[in-house]
Image (tube, rainbow, N blue to C red; front, side, top):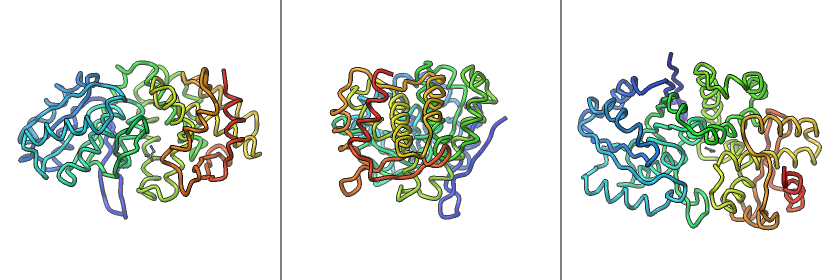
Length: 362
Ligand code: GLY
């Protein structure tokens, strides 16, 4: 069984998201992009190169020429230097405006290749082939691309929509457990910000999800992408509602930076989410029971819920450099209730401190 979602902007089709358990249907999707006289460069990192041959086999009969480029895995390589090396590779291989990049990997690969595609020759097409849960349910959909700059996460970037997002869910089986859990932080997020029934569904299906039963994972990834698709269709450039997808991200990014990217992104988002829920409780919007339940749900999916060994003053200072600042104010995402998030620019340092003290050593 495979599923398709269409992402539409301004009521017209923009790209398809394909959910399948192999790369067998990739060729059929590439036919729709009419690449028979175009070159393709499949870009992956040193981890996702294990899928390279499979993707090449399913691509080669549908394009004029298949090239590949592998860079070392790791957030520390999500930089303009890696983009520069990729530009050099593309220039030497004579890639022109009509040729196409494939991003085969997790969030680092997708964001970096998307940014390269957005800027090379003022923009060429690209296809997302996400291989991690986090990139499937979040970063591969919606056209945010970019790289880190001097440890400021995603500081340089562009909106550039993929031409297709093809998810081979079988790749999740080779993910280390911590990385699968990291993706769960972004999945749970959709429950908190938009879909209370989905939050319940995740709890009801906890064991089947953690056992990675295919039909359940398919439904979970599909429902996450449906939620993301609906948000980004209404607000592609984050003028409003799309900011809700940043629940847990302001404090999460600060923790991620202060931990020198030793924690996975989703792990930091989980920590930031618990802090945001604490602030929502302190403002009287959620109950203490809902906070305790959130802590146990987040933990049950293998995610951290607290900070150890970090200085709270430094975390608060790091939030001031987050790119989600607007006119000097941080845009926080709080929960009015489970399934309903709001944007709030009035969160004080004292509220952040209280939340961080609450999660310290948890
Ligand atoms: N990852 C949040 C967004 O795409 O807006």
